[in-house]
Amino acid sequence: LYPSLHLNLAADYDRLGHREAARLHLRRARTAAESLAPGRYGAGVRASIDRLELRLDGLDGLDGLDGL
Image (cartoon, rainbow, N blue to C red):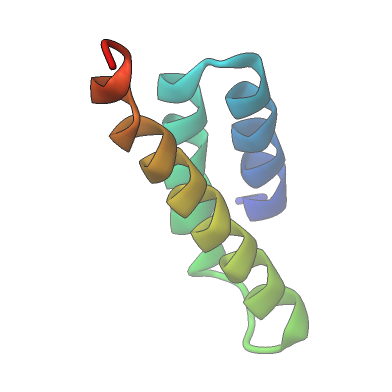
């Protein structure tokens, strides 16, 4: 339930630097988004989930660069 709520929580946790909490709510958002009806709203929520996931994956990919 409430995919946009979990998406917003994930984005907020990301802004606070709490990546594990962000990923948890992102997974919940993706699961909840499966129940959305086809249409612009559902497509927009799913696209936002995808964008946040890409951003989190990009940040995780930078972890190994700290020593450079």
